[in-house]
Image (cartoon, rainbow, N blue to C red; front, side, top):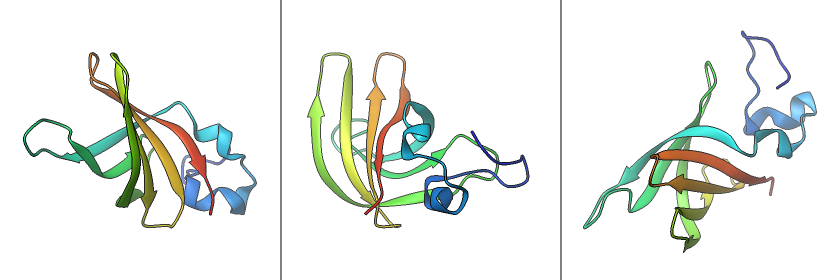
Length: 102
């Protein structure tokens, strides 16, 4: 990842430092979820696991799909960009699988 420890790179700032969106894919993230009738029903907000990282509010869940080992959510965040968040339920690990600037 490009940047210094005082100036971490986040997707909302990626254009300012010319880091390709692919640099963020596969990155572990912290996700806070709505838990209705089941745990981790849908993401509410997520934060990249980097010092000083910005927390993104999920404004809309556009799509979701399941696999025996994981669940994915395509979301629009408060910065207007699109993200695909993957939850590996067995290990309880969330990753950022895709990022698209809109």
